[in-house]
Image 1 (tube, helix red, strand yellow):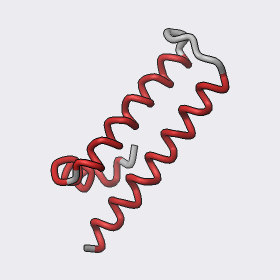
Image 2 (cartoon, helix red, strand yellow):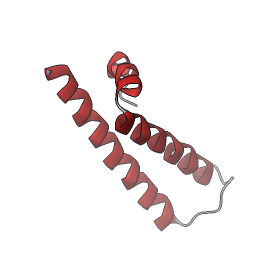
Image 3 (tube, one colour):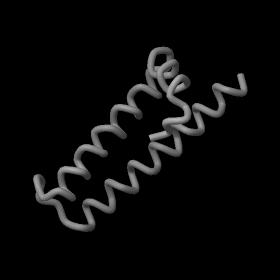
Length: 72
């Protein structure tokens, strides 16, 4: 996820509590989606799609914060 911004992500995780929280929430959702897709966690297709949409919103928010931090 956003590998090209690895340094910025590391910096923001340390300096911005909100960024750190949404980063962790994104990772948690990523693991939950993977578990569901692999059949380890029983979830409906609707639940999986909802989680994927939440991940995308979090990723968009993180990217916005990364780009804003680069401008500063």
